[in-house]
Image (cartoon, rainbow, N blue to C red; front, side):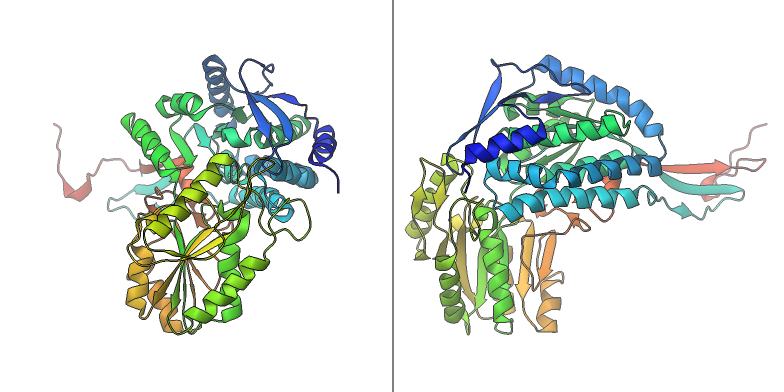
Length: 513
């Protein structure tokens, strides 16, 4: 197999990337600044991938002004025409899917199929947006007044700010950007500092497509640290909406800043996702669903399965079979065939893995398998870990971005739901059962309190057609499919009087002599 450097060199050449790249784009690329740059190393083995320069406050402001100017023309372009532009972008990304997927794998450590899946998700969202261009609907209501028409319409907001996380360095941006652009907004993107290179690669591909297809410069990229560029975005009244993916702590801070200026937010914050496995579950389906949810992306998904609650009658059997799966799951270079678990993103992530396990044991948990750091110098690898837990352990109520799974035992559905819902987060959930009554209980008001609820499938791996987001500390708001497009627009109720008098609502009389 080729070395990481050889793969990097080949991929860079085909994408037109260099070892030193500007991370600032708004119709043009700003000059690379060696004094203000992020060094990118692969978590696979520490190989140096390059540097990406970050935006200055002045460059940030220039990008916002550019997006404001583009918005004027773009918002007046018919929506079906806008959606065809997004389709052209999706088609162009499709041609570069393999290369862009490689960059994702190199920079954040996703296994090959997940890196490719990340880019496929962008393509899928683009095609979803293509259809959306002809489905931006508003309601018509019956007016109580004669010769009046009452209806609502949706109008684009303006410049949308998107702050994305490292674990999905490109697709989550597209959830927001492609939908927002289709409804008439322009988009300013600040990616995670841990995924700067992926953002540059994506934007370079999109730039080429926009030039080729004569698409206005509706997307801008401003790499930078959260405490710098992120703060500017939070305080900027020119951004009526900011979509943020990240930690609960940072999300709360940003939400307060944006709310103080009466701006809007879409927040996708912490996830402490749980799967319930009934005694009536299909064991094979349940094992695969739980294992994928817990192991995919090395447990670094916001939808990763972090807790599993198993019925007491099958608990021991399920535990041993899951343990066997864990011990056979291959951990290593994500670009190699057969690897299930790739690296953690950095050394801090490894430390958090160690701390969480230590806390779990101290609080009464028992390690079933795992609890070992495999490598932290040439890459960041840990052993996927299963811990038997008891209800009330504080660590099980916290989100740790690592392949750690806490196991609980239950006897009744009421007990299972109590354990399931007794965490601050509310993103994704799952139940494995073949019993219709249990399904309906799980999906009722007494059941899952999460934004995503799954039956006989994993907590991870949401489709783009459904609205994505959660409740409680997960933040609220929805991205991607269904009617999430409405969040990127303002609703306007329109009343038209086509009569020769002005009858007032509720029969109010107002006479003028």
